[in-house]
Length: 411
Ligand SMILES: [Zn+2]
Image (cartoon, rainbow, N blue to C red; front, side, top):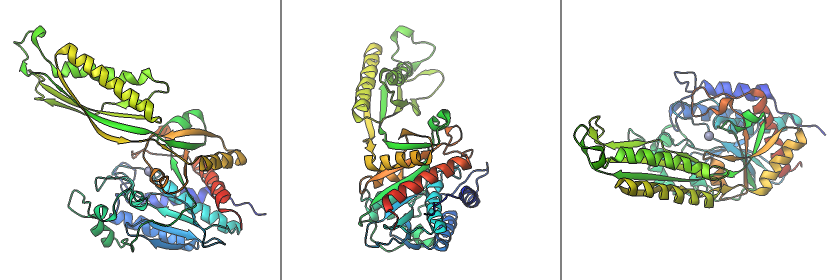
């Protein structure tokens, strides 16, 4: 029996060719969704898929599906893919790898003359990054029924262009409906966008799930006053109180094991003048943890810490929860298939959690889904310096190939 083989060179060259479409000033990639550059990248993917013998179709939100037929065409397909759009200052691997690795799996099966029982579909999901129309994962959200199609088509960018208009302009407004058909399973391969695999010298992560996340606005109100005349004992300084709260909030992370990640990244100060005692400060909290209950406990601890400080300093406090996403657990069968594929190929693998959002999270609501991570240099992503090693990309694609084969079955 011929063994299919990932062509590391071909996979790498594909990334370099895609990276030329929408180059950014600092050597990265600037390919926002539904721009002329996105159209060019889509055309290239489409051409490569057709050259590999796939039938290509586009749905009503612009998702592109490249199908390698199975011996049993009536059976739901094994699906894989990610996205070709990037951040305004992005790199050549975030998303692109997931599409090109899927294509490489098809090419490797073709080269080895292997037919599969189930069809295989490689997908480019529309606008994963959310950098243009104010919401992310548009294509996979609509596909999974988690966003309405019409409302998504009506979203506008900063210049008033709609998703519908831009899809039509670039020639990727396919026929409705979107989704609504059965899928055997979905695998997405992606760079980790964090440092864990690289630090541990491990080539592949079997992603168990994605973290829960909760966001808050905290508003601390005191009273403005003259910086030179109001004695310290009489002040209600919203900045000083907030500084103590921020320190306490971030330290809450250390009280839980494993730690949640807690970030205070945005601050608004009233009146923001160097010689007025600040009367009001609003700061953001972004908190994430794989366990919903631990994240909720951390949220309660942050709230209690802020209340104690507010009372101590005579400040008013208002805490508003602005966002919440429950954690997602990927299908145990898909995760095990990924672990087994790595073990069978002698590729080092560890379980890992995703700190970021991905299309696979949406797909997990409509079919069994799993993700594979590979290391990227220093964990850097959403950055022009984003980089990865050809051998790691190839090892990940090898695991993807064998995970897909395990599900699709040799004919
Ligand atoms: Zn991505």
